Length: 265
Image (tube, rainbow, N blue to C red; front, top):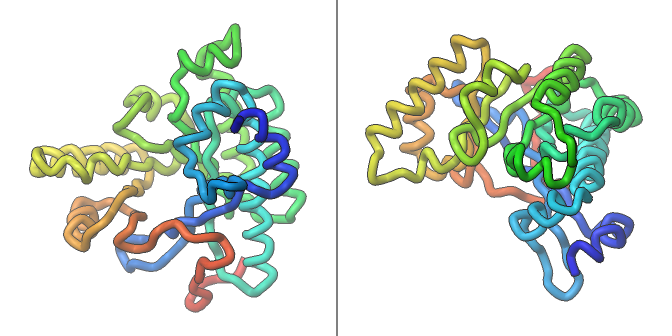
């Protein structure tokens, strides 16, 4: 039913843009947000992405949703700038299925430039939801990661920031740090949930942060729920964070973005 309704849902605006703020840990100022999708499904209310993203990745229709959400993020940014808003970065997630599509580079440029946005305002997040094996099922004859690397490198050269999502979980791996042209590494929230091995996990986080910094990569940790976690990440040298301690994801129209002490775009 979800797969069959997907096209109508796009046309009817049923997919809604939610934003979860991100904060710099050195001064606890909001600098950006992650774009998240919620499906306002008729008769059910809000449906969370873990219910429909795997379905759309399997059918290939995730490509349309990814670009739809990019456009929604651009609309938000354009409105934010037009209202006198300060410099702000929105991170937009892309499935590996989408990254492998032939027109990915041109589509990203077309959508962002349509809204006359500085490219630095859009962070492209290399998603790890679909493994290479799963992506091959959707895209037969799939080649290695080189095409994705080439596209992301070209977009980075156009001024976009590139991020790797959920590092340390699922299908992310150390060798991608060397292959992908990333500027931001996002630590998976599961690192902060390993209470039984708390000290060991803290050492892992601290060394991952050190490794990333040696490679010139900034680190953001998701899933921060307590002040203790925030203070630990700050002490470990983590650059940025997001999570319920700061804010839950909110509808884009409800996000209050500070406008003081920042340069206008």
